[in-house]
Amino acid sequence: MKTVADLHMHTNHSDGTLNPTELARLARAQNVDAVALTDHDTVTGIKELVEETNRLGLEAIAGVELSANFHPGTLHILGYGFDPEGPIRGKLERFQKAREERNPRILEKLKALGMPLTLEEVQEIAQAKGQVGRPHIARALEAKGYVKSYKEAFDKYLTKGAPAYVSKAAWSAEECIDMLHESGGVAVVAHPVQMKLQGMELRTKIGELAGLGLDGLEVVHPDHKPEDRETFKQLAGEFGLLTTGGSDFHGDHKPGIQLGQGRPPYEFLERLRERIKERKGN
Ligand code: AMP
Ligand code: ZN
Ligand code: FE
Ligand code: FE
Image (tube, rainbow, N blue to C red; front, side):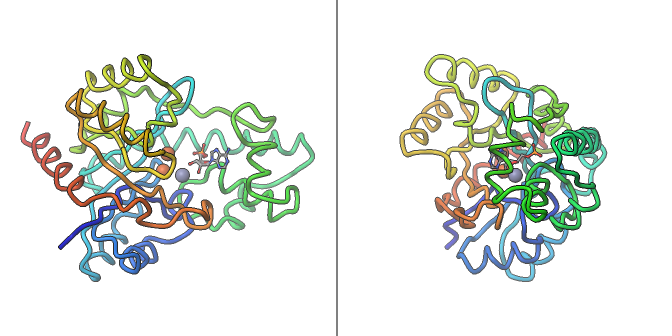
């Protein structure tokens, strides 16, 4: 019987450290029955992942994680169930371009702070295969001896408000949700606790997103305490949203997190699949 579906994880096509084949093998080793690869702004790792999950007899579903414009916290939107070789590829180009424009600006700021790095060095040191982002720059700063740790790189230089921080062009939640629907997928708010809203403000925002066609809320996530899970589960019920869960596994970039952590129930995936089918029928 299938019991665990981990629907949130990253590979080296974005800011995880394993490749898709290694990730599939780790899922098997951790007794995870189904996986969704949700790299930031890219779907290029999915083909390799599916080849390996098919070999291993695991279930896999296509995924992606987009960052939407938001205050006061962050709003990440997970997409599921689209064809990874289909129109979504072209639609993701502008998200990727925003990163390409931002990375050199971060490096300029670091240079001005006395820590020169080239983009090639970042790619080389971080072994990035696809989307390059702040986690790779943090690793490169560490490797060059400019900081003692990955965390120090973020806290001192790269986090929002720090001296080498550069904001990235992002799209509204509505644009992200529409883009996912137009690609044949569904849209789920990742780790809603990171929106940093409570009470009525949280309820109003979730209601608004539901009105825009949002399909679900990620309830099981390592950042969620039991009371957070309860809050988001209730809100999902209230607004007719699905519930999902995942580990947000990043390999060595988040060493405290195991693949399959939280053991998100397989039923979440069954309902998600029904919703994907309904949307495709429309
Ligand atoms: P980017 O997409 O380039 O803006 O990088 C975002 C990623 O950086 C997130 O997915 C996290 O993995 C990581 N990150 C963001 N803020 C921090 C932080 N304060 N400490 C450690 N990692 C962080
Ligand atoms: Zn990430
Ligand atoms: Fe996220
Ligand atoms: Fe993530």
